[in-house]
Amino acid sequence: MQTEQRQKALQNKAVFISCIVPVYNEEALVEPFFTQLAESLNQLASRFEIIVIDDGSSDQTALKVLNLPKECHVKFLGLSRNFGKETALTAGLEHCSGDVAVILDADFQHPIEVIPTFLKFWADGYEMVYGVRENRDNESSIKRNLAHLFYWLMTKITNIDIPNNAGDFRLLDRKVVTAINQFQERSRFMKGLYAWVGFKKIGVPFVVQDRPAGESSWGLGRLTELALTGITTFSDIPLRVWGLIGFIISLTSLIYAIYFLTKTLIFGADLPGFPSIIVAVMFLGGVQLLSIGILGEYIARIFTEVKQRPKYLIGQQHGFE
View 1 (cartoon, rainbow, N blue to C red):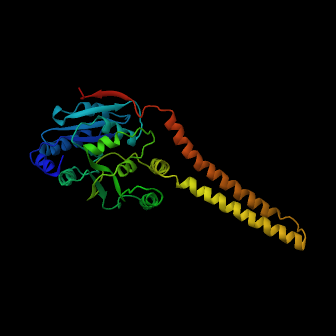
View 2 (tube, rainbow, N blue to C red):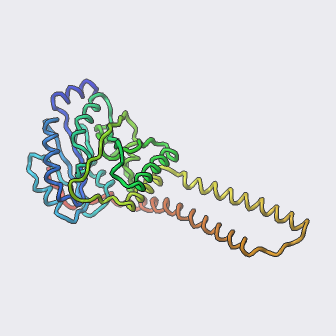
View 3 (cartoon, rainbow, N blue to C red):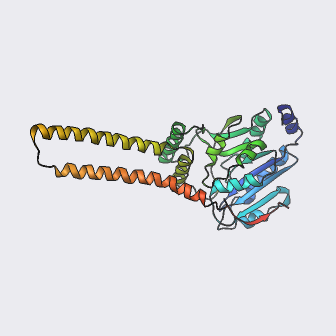
């Protein structure tokens, strides 16, 4: 759509909105969240769909979603097991039909009130409108500092521009959704894919709300794993760095060998130093193990891709008829 067509469609409530909401053990929030979301969307568009992707919940989340009233316009995808949020988002994008897709979480931390602002910028010609956290005051200092380190590192070692403090909360135009759906990779880092596809984009600041119930399933371990996926899928700098380190160590060894040979020819042989040998062996052994570990991360990603398994499996599906 052209800008004028978008503005007219938004004014006439003729924009078909697809909301993509991944859920995992959110039974306490299903009814209030989706009721409020449907009421908000009903004021913005005459036609909308809410695609709920249950990522293998172990509680009553799926049952409560299926019992939501028809007025919520919910379409349900129940994955056969827990595949992870990145894969759940992929499933939602591959099954949405709207002119725009709005991605948000079901825990009220992504404010529903910001969606009209997203649509306004979309009507002004932007293909992607993403939310930017104004602060991280509700997080621990360790998690906050690690997040800043990750975003800084990604800007240095990749060729993509991932906005600082921008997450999955965003609006995507249909052409962006189509572009992302062309990716067949299994190891997915969605924030990187959003940045890689490009298109005209703009950030909208928002304040992260507190969860009314439940706890986040994103601990430090899962966030670290996601960060490693982002680094290894969008940069080969770690491999190059260790190649450079190997060259420096080899050059240092050559210089030391020349120095030792020269000293021996001039002054004779000294008593071999056992401590220095142990230090050198342990240092080189540690470097080799670390470099093998980094290489193993990349090989593991290759191993996952070459098996060509499906990105996800759907256990149950409702509302797409």
